[in-house]
Image (cartoon, rainbow, N blue to C red):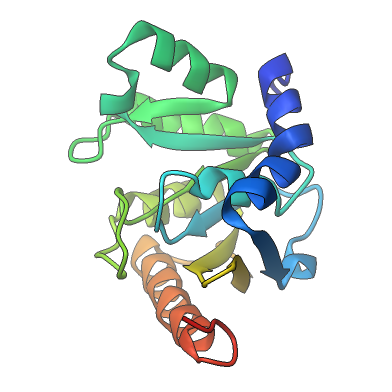
Length: 195
């Protein structure tokens, strides 16, 4: 495993009080589904730029985040993101080196945070195919996470958890898409998330 940066440790330590103080409390449902000690892909919908902070709350493991390459064009931002375990990916034309980097992380039983929509969407956008390819090659477990912002809190739901072993990338992507759709329906009910 790669060594955790001091900034990542500090961020994880202070993320809960910071997020609660600014954006309200966080309610996490289904966290117990996430198994420990296995290669893990956390595939989440992407409703705001602060989503990685909520993903960090799902597990005490270090999570490596795929981030759009455009965020890395300024040296100071690139250094900050890198120290928070983020690495760049060209969303339209991911390189074989990026795929191999993710597979290396997962083969060391690491955790990878991916937003398969590739960008922030208030409503569910199309799923990019890369997550299925990464899961198929690495045979990692996949946690399908759905987030919804309510009036005074954020709900985070681990909707599905499965092993990608023996599945093709198309099956994996379809299961993630279905998990997103079902999770959004659950969290969109008024009793679950009053608007």
